[in-house]
Length: 408
Image 1 (cartoon, rainbow, N blue to C red):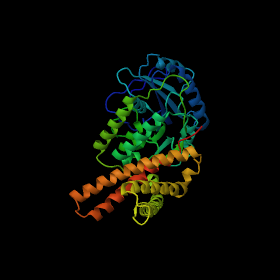
Image 2: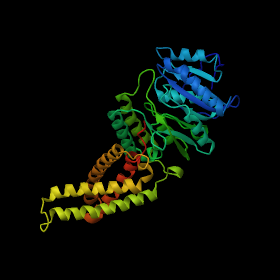
Image 3: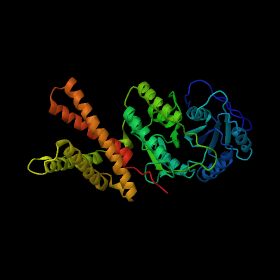
Image 4: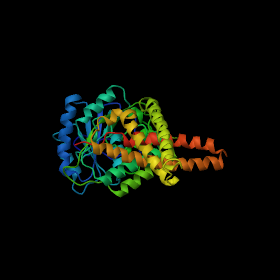
């Protein structure tokens, strides 16, 4: 790899987006890539804070690599001037390529570190979390991810629309590529670090701006650790999140699903939570009895004798409410105890309702498919449909309903 001296810009690599082995000389422990575009007002502050943070834990054993997509505000030029004050800083100006994900990979290609990382250049990722991520790597993790959805994490002031889009994107991911997105609580995180040897030789082929999906899907990543962080709003510059990026995200999921061929893997720390699933199943069984009892009280000729459809809708909703209360107090108590305000419980209940409704639609779909094309036995087909819907309800609720998201 051709890397110029510290007083010049880095040569932009060409060819496949692959990470090579460590260079034979002049190595460091950690290489942190900062992809930028129109971040002139932020870059000096970012470099200063990152340098101060890393100097405390791995002094002189790291490098910062700014990869700028030829910003019209000359971000790359401002960063290049900073190399005189910060010798650990290196700068790349890309004039022929565009895109956050490919910028990260190009930065990793010239990196000299055995651990590779990425952080936004807009101050939305708190630099102090780097020390926690490095600690997880030191303890044996192949991949350490800063997550908004574990203990200590959250978002500061997202709009309802942005929250909805984020949840919808994760649901799509869990459907299309469960073996990848199911391994982390925040698959759309852009703040993480990975051991170099976990992705050496893999051809990364990202679409849009979610490089983490490529690392998990194509890399040799066994152990994953997560550290909570609060996603902060920008102080300078303007947000680059657009509808186009959500479309690219879906395109990326489909292409990764087709190209990898498999559903992914659940292993080690990311395994399926059997104990929690069994509790969820027992709660669901209690909901069956509640549903049957209420349906009897409302619709039976000897009781209120309401119409069957109206009775079933009300009985189903009461059963859902019963299930939510038990799941909130028992199945997911470790999460709900940290989110105890009434509006937080209401949000979980509404999400639980929507997911259960989707589960009901899935139940009906699977029932008809199995009965009409596989097993012409309505009762066996119904059991299969119930099992599929139960797994759906549990897995999506685990990832979306009971997780830490609200912070001040």
